[in-house]
Image 1 (tube, rainbow, N blue to C red):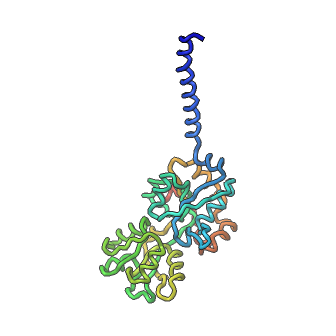
Image 2 (spheres, one colour; image 1 turned 180 degrees about the vertical axis):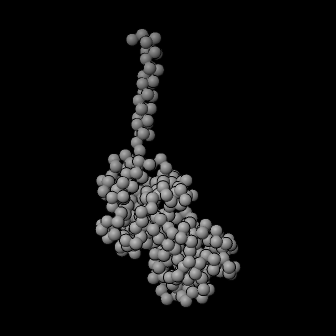
Image 3 (cartoon, rainbow, N blue to C red; image 1 turned 120 degrees about the vertical axis):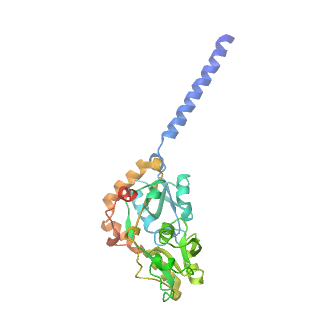
Length: 285
């Protein structure tokens, strides 16, 4: 082989190798999250500890309304391994977008603001809010307005929840708001007297009252704007529309069925929580 031919062949081989490498990279990049999780038979769900929506059992098992629904739906899609990734509530959307997990399964409410950051399935449930207060409700609190009109009242709210906006819109001052990382901290704040009340979903506050014993209670007559009714769903990255649509198709066939109601009954949900609302409607509000 002449030196001239050899020198000419070397860049040609390099070009072929570069093209092959580029082709492999392009092929890898072309794989969607849906294709990847099907190939791996595994998916990661992000959740925060908030009973009864998603939480870690004492034995380390991830459970709650949303993870249990996720496990069943993904199994119907042929994905048997569902790994939980625990994070604080306020880090769920950043964690999803950063790729720490593939879906948020935490009972997250669909709101227009969140719809700009993630895409949701249609809601799994509808649920109103209520207050957790000291036994006997000594400050006579029955609404955000009651909190707002008494500047001495402190309200414990979980960081990153829609309740922060609801409280502020109702006139509750920043000095009255105690932001905490999770529902356990809400309960501790009310029990210790650092907050006069905590606000959250009706089921969550009832669950905290049960845990909190005789010192606290969840009020039964909370007055709130009907538009504040929460609609919880699974959330995905905007680029994972095919994954969201595949999950949504399974959910639409399953929600409201006997199997669904049996799966969520241990967490306090029943047929009254089933809704026909869609993510599109709620995102457009």
